Length: 325
Image (cartoon, rainbow, N blue to C red):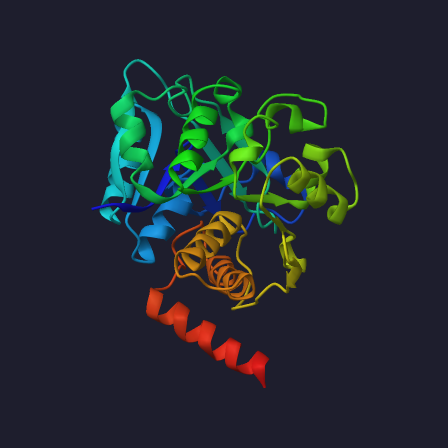
């Protein structure tokens, strides 16, 4: 059976520590106390593929993981929610990436410390059978492209070129380099952008990729470079889509008390791709994605508070009806 979404990108562990730290920094060196600690399967595509599966989509992921208990944990976590993990390469003798979010001081996403992996973030080249399997899909997506210098101008670009030739819809959330790099970052993307139908960026990424401070101008530059549609994620200010027929701004959706924003952008991406598969308008896609992100920030991590599809659709229809009145 053909897949709904094939995803390429990095996976890692997120260790989420929530609780109440000392109210003054002078007490920190001698402080100890209880906290809630949770380990999740994350990375640039981890939350996204889990949420796509929770929405009932057939999704596979191509990535690399260490052949150790943490790598096995990530792969098993994805398989438990229905993600096809058959293209994940387990690399012996390597260590995996870990992000530690210490949410003890009133922050929603920081402080963060992390360990970079010693394995490839995802395969830098694909053999014929892997490429055929990934391209047997309705959408091909890559997350974290700018993270991984070895993927630039090589196998991932060739995969996207083949997808476009085959008529597969393509999307990307490039994020940012994991090493010092002066903007504009578009030099790393210029040969793959013509093969991307939909590009997700946040405001900071839009500016640093293009070297422009004006968001409208940055989106125009990305579209001129070959991207069909650009969506700029603007946090609490919502999101804006830029496409051939114009643009549309969607306000952020508040579904409850904000706990943390980890994975909210990944959940938003999943919501948009779900909408595209239903042939919804961009307005309806952004509303659905904003509802999904609004749910996920009410709990810890990027998947725990993602409700079932029926709940999501009920909320979408309720808000759509309210907007039409």
